[in-house]
Image (cartoon, rainbow, N blue to C red; front, side, top):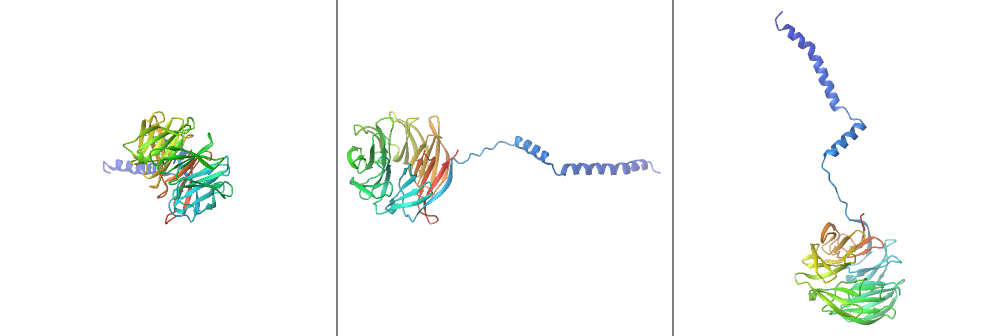
Length: 361
């Protein structure tokens, strides 16, 4: 027997045991995990992985309310809160659509108008006001069956309408530079507040007697007093143009304006008109609203987007850009319903509709 025979015999004895141990270890490594082990490994893996927070969209599309056979541009909107009815100025269709928001359907249409731009519902007299750019008229319709109830001639370019419950007056921008003052009790014009050029969006400050008016052709924001019916101030904006939408933040005492050239949000102090902040926004905006509950700002743009901003100290930060449709530049935020309503014009893919967005959270 050779000297290596004992070594060979030892290896022959040890080898099967080594193979058995290796197989056992492999089976242990690849055996299915029971439920407790899976949970434990998931917890460990998640703790080790870097945190990834995904912010939900601040606006959730809830439904689309079809407006029927409506062609062309859609302008501003107003609401009858008691009946939950939305009034839609269908400028390109020479009509006003009336939508039942509770049942989410179109219930009536007022035809035969002349390029309606502005609409306003005056609750104390249950009256719908429609401002027509085509012939400068303001047409009145009773608030239940929408029968014609009168007409006020302003001459030209009747545009935005604002209802002031505090003074029981209706204000309408029109012509080459004025806000008409309407007495809803008599359904007549009782005065004018002149400005330097055609007024676009304007907002009434409920805390004072002031009205802030976008006057893009004059490249300024006019401050007028509704008690004296005179312009009392002017904020020049030489570096920006096409200031169309406007909203007020009564808590921060700020006037928010959207410029189209360049496309920016501008934030001004109500006292003195100092420009506090600017932020880039989507193009061709025509409406702007402050959501006081969530401290947000909503901007609807004809470029096909909604921009959502939040204040951060003295600046504003965009937190979302949400696709809508080309030309969908008008909207209405209704705090009482907690909904943002966007007018989306007809396209080759979809009919005209009101897109109903629910703010989140």
